[in-house]
Image 1: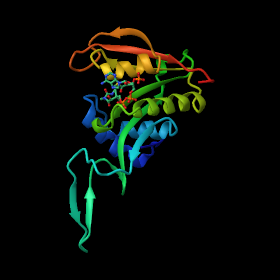
Image 2: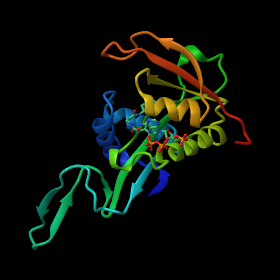
Image 3: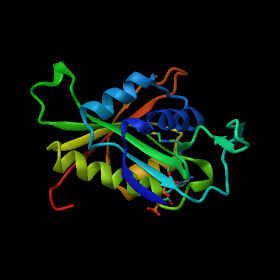
Length: 187
Ligand code: ACO
């Protein structure tokens, strides 16, 4: 598995993975906004091990007898997306008195690739870039109270602080933990 910067070519696969893994979904233009505005802040995990398709592959024939595989997770021939982290700088005009700070919009890893440290690697790359490239002094995120895996990653592995509970933050009424991590240059 390789971690690399997300590009505009990746956004359809990122959106597909997001639809597959999370109930919080976004329009393609919101992915585009992230990648165009903060091109160094979002990352994807990809693999060339194509033996374990997560979804049914569609096959097409190219008219010359060659098979073309269409899988919504292929970012390029032979390269399949298995995880992503979508991040941005906070550009809320109401927060102009705050120091520059980043936001983790969405993170997910395809099920068969979980518990291999991929999310931690994606997050560490993103935190580093937000600090080094965009001068973020801290980053924030929201997570469902019931999301044990993500809570473990943020609170225990990455040492985010719990800020507060935002009641009924999600559309289905679930509360969110608002979390924050101060970014130090030497991390
Ligand atoms: N239960 C308990 N702990 C877990 C679990 C779990 N199910 N999954 C991972 N962890 C722990 C790992 O043991 C590891 O801890 P360690 O540092 O003590 O060893 C740590 O979390 C990081 O594990 P990774 O292997 O890096 O995490 P993974 O690649 O499996 O991805 C993720 C974690 C992203 C939460 C994944 O489970 C997933 O995609 N879930 C569905 C989508 C989701 O919930 N995304 C987060 C939403 S919040 C947001 O987007 C801002």
